[in-house]
Length: 164
Image 1: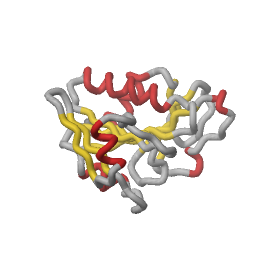
Image 2: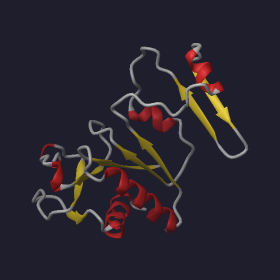
Image 3: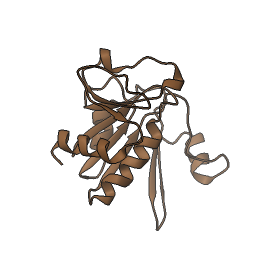
């Protein structure tokens, strides 16, 4: 599987870009999966539901299944968060895995950037960031800068970099 990451500060456009890239690559006939890293506490379950009650009772893993989908919830219960490689190993094979977040991992990435965030670019200090997608033309002189909304051009760049 080919791996490509999207990184950036909060409200930089990462999720919207991820959504558009998934749609673009699937329209091109590729199979795509995503991995999203959340820096805060999150819950995909709902209080009161049976699966939530199982986790609250202490289950290490809860596999929720139906005729339409299944989801595996794993509680770390104080254990260290696994690295990206361990999560990727759990995925079924696809042509492309798009990863949102995981800034410190070594896979190739594109930085999403919006000037309104007031944040400086991450790219100048990170050689794994191969390009920037921004709402301004400022960037790093040694890397391509794309319009944040030019999904086709960004997808073309990623496809060329990964040999897709």
